[in-house]
Picture 1 (cartoon, helix red, strand yellow):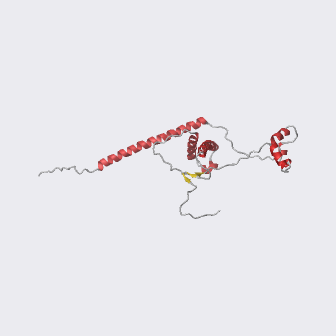
Picture 2 (cartoon, rainbow, N blue to C red):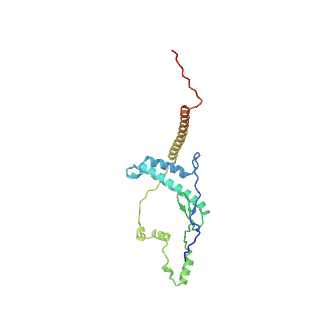
Picture 3 (tube, helix red, strand yellow):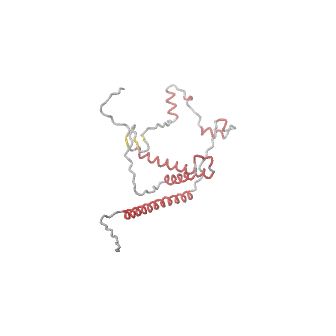
Length: 225
């Protein structure tokens, strides 16, 4: 319960992650669903001004919602896979930092009630009336409603809310557009390579034309009179 001053530094609880090395070599396309959907989403975001959603037409909004939903689902699947690997490498109460943030192993408590008979017997032994903790079984209540004149609203507080649900995905259209984006990216890489080669060739020609050779002699023709 006391704090003491020490002349030597104590180890930090924040573990620094290894520096991420960037490879300048040719980039390879990862064969994972979230990459493809994220690429399509980026393309859609570049084409439309999402800061003014109310000005977009319905088909555009549907496309955005579909892609956002797919990215969220696939990103969450990959996130859970990454989490599974991280759990084997993290220690309790020891954060690990990376380039974009930090993570820490934690414990979540999930409670599952034991069987009713065991719980009621324990409470009764402690002087607690079991009826005080007994609740209505909703599954049995629904069966009872079918054979009575009671309506659902008589025994339930019902609150409805509307939401948008993704009904279908045109995978063929997504794949067609995705292939077009890949072709554009590949073409951009090729154009960059060709342009760089042309620049280097031009620089070499300029160097040759502007270079000065001290061993070169210049002769002038004299005219006699």
